[in-house]
Image 1 (cartoon, protein in one colour):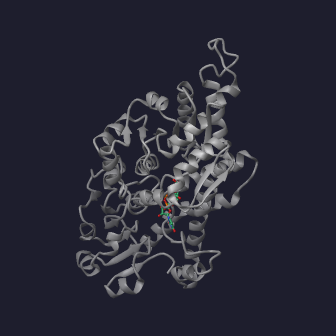
Image 2: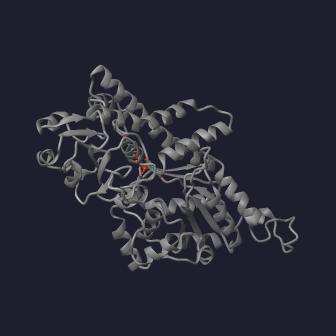
Image 3: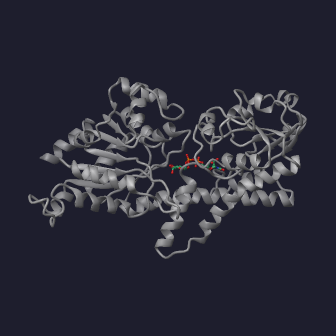
Length: 464
Ligand code: UGA
């Protein structure tokens, strides 16, 4: 009887949801679920983020997200709240989207996940489905389960503080843990939420499966049911494979330069083979961001703990770390001496359509240019504020420009580090007229070499 009522509540979207962690995954998930008709509470340990969201603003830039946020603050279906424990008690489905930063050895730091599990345990007032969305190493879901069992009121049957204990099996019947890894990409998170290629649901109970299947039913994509460990491993494998593709093509790009071939045509040629495909084979200055580099290291660490030397992935990482040196070498070859020369830098974000600069390749490149004594004129459509925290304007060596053209003014070279569409639209003739010396060093292959040369530039790009 109880189950039937629950099924009806599910269909009527009356099951309350909460999302823990208001970051790049948590906010799109929360407002995306609100758009699908669910009532969603959003919490974060950083109360400033909650205050910002309440005012209808976002703590970071992400296309289309602002509109959805405003819409569902107004509809009342998304409620940011400081009352974490109250929200846990009110919720039936809890999406865990908290950060999983990295320790020095590459291991994922799961202290935020553990803290959340303990808080849920303290507030386990009825059935709850805890859905792990953060990227975590395999068997984390099992640890969340164990932690909740251990810390749930009365869960520790040996504890003298819990005289009115219930048994471990009674507690586990009051909650399920699922692994539902997120595959969305920054810069297109809203699109990816509504149009995923697949949804992966790692579950170990029918109830958990039914809830997740109902939540994701409108998305019209394959919904893959797996066990918990498999779901966790799918996420890590996907990111490690994507990273491998990028390092692979970057090495091919270097080879193209030495033998005199065009890497873009090579990608076209191999990409037509459906077993290979053309995607995620854009050569450049390497992969950055909060996910690929960190997840790759965590995967290597995970393998190592299991006694496996995943040396292939170590090489993927090594190739990636060298990309900024490869690029700086190109700048050197073009300019010879950098000391005292003005260099324009276009693109600071780790990829377009975001203001995120975490592990952005631009950081290492800027450090290298400054170490050589260059004077930098930087521009990015949205990441400049974040970059100012790392490279402030003081000292006259670093200047942030309000237009791309200003970064080119008086420069001895103009470097492209992020492939923003805005840069493709630049009037190259105007850029050339502004520059002291017309040299473009393009780390993202934004232009056709013939086009850049026809505009009067010495043009250096990747693998062509
Ligand atoms: C990545 C994955 O693509 C998502 O599927 C995953 O959900 C996410 O991590 C995550 O784990 O949360 P994201 O970090 O947003 O997404 O960025 P990507 O689009 O993967 O780009 C990562 C880096 O690789 C960027 O620096 C980008 O410039 C670089 N890249 C990407 C290349 O150099 N070449 C390519 O062909 C593609």
